[in-house]
Amino acid sequence: MRIRELRFGLLLVAMATPFVLHAQTPAQSAPTRAPNSSPAGAVPDLSGNWLGKGGGVSWDPTDPGGKKPMEMAMVPWARQKTEAARPPFGARATFDNTNDPVQKYCDPPGVTRLFSYPYQFMFVQTPKAVYILYEYTRVWRLIPLNQEHPKDPDVTWMGDSVGHYEGDTLVIDTIGFNDKTWLDMVGHPHSDALHLVERWRRLDQDTLEAEVTISDPKTYPKTFSGKRTYKLSAAPMAEALCSLTEMQAFQNDVMTPTTKPPQK
Amino acid sequence: MKKLLVLFAVLSLLAASSTVSAHHGTAGYDMDKVISIKGTVSSYSWANPHVVIHIAAKNDKGQPQDWVVELAAPSMMARGGWTKNSMKPGDEVVMETHPAKNGVTTGLSGTANGVLKFVVNGQPLPAF
Image (cartoon, rainbow over all chains, first blue to last red; front, side):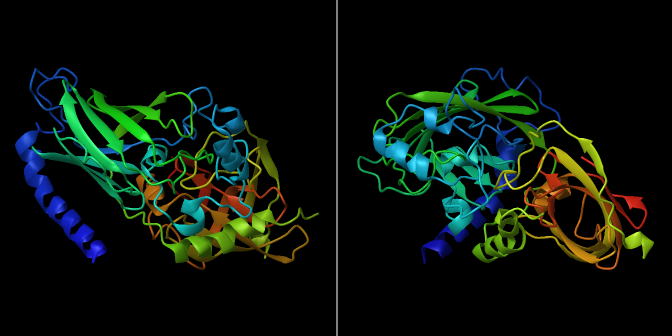
């Protein structure tokens, strides 16, 4: 039942998109002013399909390439989980017997990992809410504007988000995550105390910046932050669902053979 | 027969690649090595999580050898100009790949950030 509701909600969003974009934003190809110079009270235009190059596989600000995942400051249980991780990226990357919840089970990647995939996403801006639609796994987020979080939100895969505009920036605050996802591509964990603040800003017509601040006092002693940039894409959003049957077939056909003992 | 011979010539030693795959890294592949393969397409799967090609080739002793080659996801290959019709079973292909480290006939030829050389029936496929 819940899946049906989600699909129906997404359909409504998709149906409303052409009108919303037309009503709220100038034509994408012919902006009348620099997108980062919105006058006071104006809503910045974040429309378009945005594509990252991937990379930034770790949120450790001193090690974005994940070359030293064990050196991130974390509490003992988090260190044990990181040590036990068999991740797809970074210094400890392996194809053998992965326990990455995305690769092994097609679990939702979680918000913090979605920043690092080289897939597209798009914003749908309406007066009362912003939606972010992701190409990878076709997940989406609802960000009500100018509201408070519920006092005791349920813990969910995508968390509870609220947002507001600060000049040319969309600020999103998210709490209420479950602890089933990895923080990043190298297997760093997080707890249900994860708190994410995103600041989305269009640097120019073709460039979008996300500044992300992450706090999780149950897991990491310090708050940390990082930036990712994305380029405007002319390509349509494609289907990039995570199908467990497709993933397992790929694992058997391609990845598993590469984990066998070396051949002479 | 000659056309089906695998050319195991190592073309070049490349710097460590910074390419990023969609859902996994490059841990199983020798990203410092690129080899050329010549053969016939057995299957071309335009599907998630990655496009996969099976190629019937022969090794340097003339023995049949099946290669499995991984590319990026369909959405990424499409952004680079490839389509589900870029090749079909029976096509003759000359292509490059990063071979598996362990010596099995599996290779990586494309990621989100680029694809190695592919020539199908004498026509080059889009590079990106």
